[in-house]
Image (cartoon, rainbow, N blue to C red; front, side, top):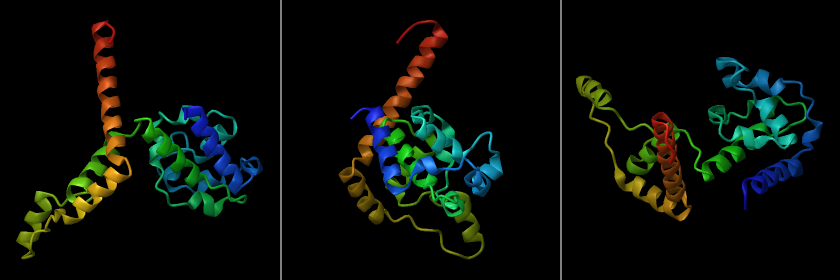
Length: 185
């Protein structure tokens, strides 16, 4: 299935749930979005995701870092007078981007950390030092859970997806290096 077919599937899934053409373009989703309020609607605009999907231009969103700013709080859905599931649409687009190897480095690092340690953010040496100063034991790292997560990641093709993201990053770096040198890859 190519990108356009995936996007059509995402759009169809959305259309089955709600008549997206009923979106008023009122901007309530933007006003309700904590990310949009925090960083500004010029940078993060949930309504733009709906608009691009309706107009068949969602491919432009797949490479944008702003796509990954959604916190999945669903405030957009809760406040939408038409109940357009914007956060679900964003999650679908994130999944599509990820399947194409487009995932921000910090998210890849977090997933790898979860698979290696079972923690999204493993306890730092500084945190454990502070705990020792307070008479508390260090936070233990227990890899039993992470082994289960690795099994799940392998079974669900997450490891393949991570590898695809890494390969894409290497290719992008090679293209950038070649462009700096004035050559081609």
